[in-house]
Amino acid sequence: MSKLIILHVDDDANIRALTALAFDLGGEALVHSAPSGAEALRLLADGIQPDLLLLDVMMPDMDGPGLLDRIRAEPGGPAAPAIFMTAQTQDHDRAALLARGAIGVIIKPFDPMTLEDQVRLLLKNAP
Image (tube, rainbow, N blue to C red):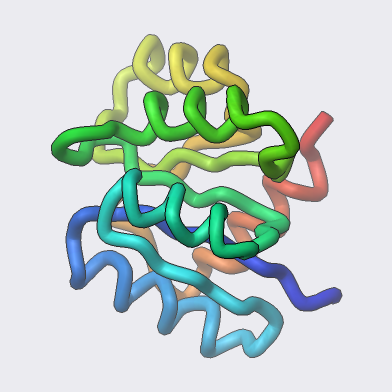
């Protein structure tokens, strides 16, 4: 497994900490965390080059789908695959997120012991 550079955006500090811990346990990923879409855009402008965007769906000011749209609209912005994280479990909600260009959706609450495996499986099966 190669080291994965992840930009994780979630307004919940506990979720950011749990996600970072989940990837630290495996030791195969470097997680850059941001509490908002604006902070994520700043990290990208500062030169972070993620292999994966891990985006919370519901955040104040700029939600995950809106952030993904902004990232994709930036000339020279990262083309990294995106995975949304959400508590929304309806099939039509997941389908709408996938239609926005995500390679997968991880439902919250998630199991930190299997999160890295879930992410790697989504990346492996991505088109």
